[in-house]
Image 1 (cartoon, rainbow, N blue to C red):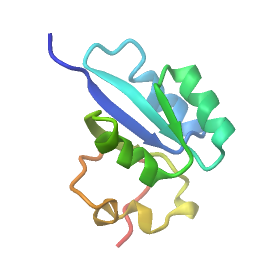
Image 2 (tube, rainbow, N blue to C red; image 1 turned 45 degrees about the horizontal axis):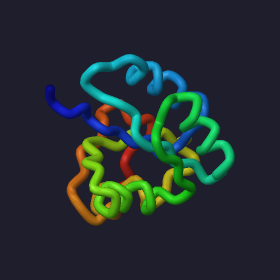
Image 3 (tube, rainbow, N blue to C red; image 1 turned 180 degrees about the horizontal axis):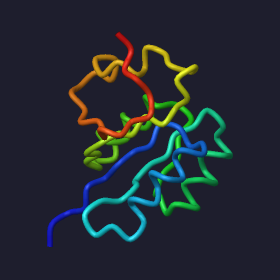
Image 4 (cartoon, helix red, strand yellow; image 1 turned 135 degrees about the horizontal axis):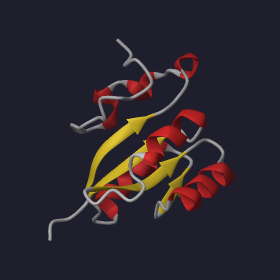
Length: 109
């Protein structure tokens, strides 16, 4: 049996509900981590969606892949466009990350 793809969410608002449905009962992929600026909200959403971890800083979410030996395969950036920052630029993540094509935020220039 092959390993399931691990996915991380950056942002745990309303749009994330729809994305979480795609991983519920999915034999090929699972939501591994949820990141939101509100730590209590991130933990609550992680529990609701069956994710193993929650974070308040996207850099910690990305770092967990290395430090915990968990292979994170993709990241969904689910933040409102008015909250776009340099974090949306793939180069700011410090490595080449595959991004889920349906990310709800346009990548910064």
